[in-house]
Length: 286
Image (cartoon, rainbow, N blue to C red; front, top):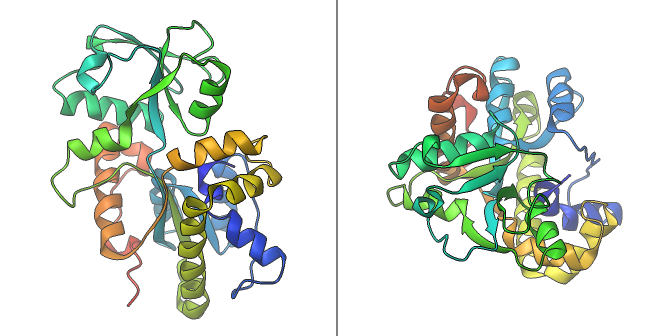
């Protein structure tokens, strides 16, 4: 229930009207771990999940799933009323509020600090709940995912998005390197083997749906509000351009995901299921 589904609302809308090429039954949950259990039990064919969870699923299902596309790149932003923050280095000596110690945003921050010659000792990190991150004080600096950033900015007009961690990540990479990946789409291997045509139709429709979300923001925002992802369409419209909704498949997907997973692996192997997935994890369709 977030940016991951926002790229799918157009396809969900079409499917509900019987206008999609494929035949789908959609389930949206708040917590991705609910989907994980259903993938393991075989109740779901395809799931859109965080990239690190996809890797965990690959181990848990004994290589029984493959990643078929990237649906969301980085959705992490630093928001602050302080315009002097223009790079990771500018966080030196500051207090940064963020959610979840030992979660992927935390690992991403630690990686970006080290890539910029810093450690967490160079700043003060306070871990808070999403709702509390920027409410504590008006001049707080917060690291938050979308759409929470946009919601916070709607409540506090002094806040601006000062750093986009997707861009900060890219600055640390060679050309055509890894990317900050939030969401990927996984499919059960037996479905890929038995119904490759149906999966290819889904991929085509998923790509079109993601493109629609980015090109038709107002219309998508209404669908997002109707789906209950963000309460109000105007806030959804503000958030969509910053949600990194995308569709990337093939070898480009493999490069971006494998590099991202290896960064998480270096921070904490358990965050991706204990080991880096092998080539069989990546579905490269002809």
